[in-house]
Amino acid sequence: MVQTVQGAWRAGRFWWDSSRPGESGAHPVRAVIFDLDSLAEVECGGHRLAFNAAFAAHGLSLTWSAARYRKLLALPDERQRVAAELRARGISTECDVLLRLLVERICATKARLLDDVILAANIDARRGLVDLVTDAFTAGVAVGVVSTGRRRWVDPLVRQLVGDGLIQTIVTADDLPVAASHGAGLRAALAEIGAPPHDALVFTGSPAGLRAAAAAGAVGVLVDPEAVGARADFDGLTITDCQRLHAASWVRGGRSAAA
Image (cartoon, rainbow, N blue to C red; front, top):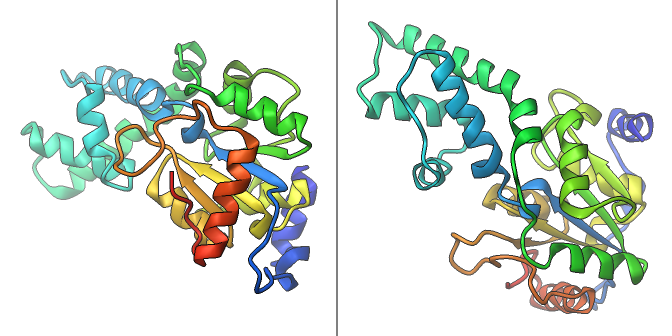
């Protein structure tokens, strides 16, 4: 899979680049793609714990609660979150250069700890996820998962959340060029499945993921229990509902489906 995907990226194009949705906007869902954050609360249940372990490793009496971490997620980069927290707590150094160095060290420690922290964490799937994935599989709709994480922990976590045999492809950071843009995993997953973006429904756990889906030409659905207007989970959602969401979005001419 990696060879096929990277070959397409080197070529700078995919086979569907010459294919565009017709004026009718009628496109069946051929693929459902989940980013990892839509499957479960990975940020608070995994990344937050890894940061807390990194703070302790650097001798900082700093612990992020789930509520505090969710607020900091408004900052798009984890280094910005750490720097903001250090300044808010009055933890500073003699100059900005030294502060940035401390931030880099904390984030590097967190990255080293993340695999083991997530593998040991008790992260649960969002309600209704397994039922929806099973329904899609039974209906012959391909299911993929994309993540910016490493395969070492992403694969076991997906198996823990969904089980074996239901996911057609999992694309991780290990499968993409280092400089790949946001949304590269989505395009790579669709390339592996063989479905054009306009025939895909993408569930994402962040506004950035929603924007990436729209930029790729796919319909996106935000799954976030904290966000206004987003789906809290997948409870009661079927593949037939997904088809309706997808069709309604094309009728409106948009790329974001209402929850």
